[in-house]
Length: 130
Image (cartoon, rainbow, N blue to C red; front, side):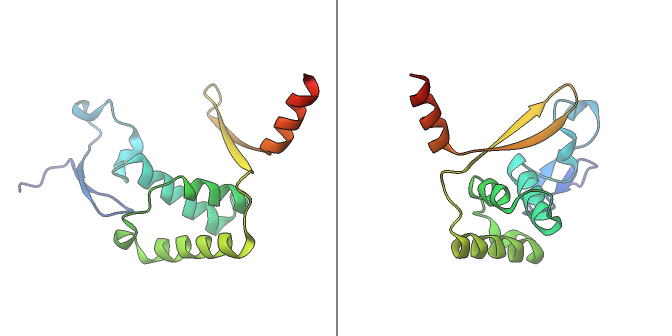
């Protein structure tokens, strides 16, 4: 295989993929510079968020549960350790399934906020309105 400037290896899973900041790849997001997929990008952000306490632990665990960790053996050791720690924390603390996180993207300001919604409260409020 001839190595080109577009050859990349994913920071998370190590898979080979092609990306460069040239016209040929202009329709791809710039995060492809480090990650092969949105899943790998999200996993990196989730584990970094856990380490740095960027978001509530329940939110990070909810985000992890929605991610594909099937390639975990290919992840860097530190990331494997953080995912194991998160799963252990979840099993010890029984994070309720009925607490759902919603990520709202404000495209104008490119800001992200997290809201927690308890479906039981929403159901009860909707019953009151009827």
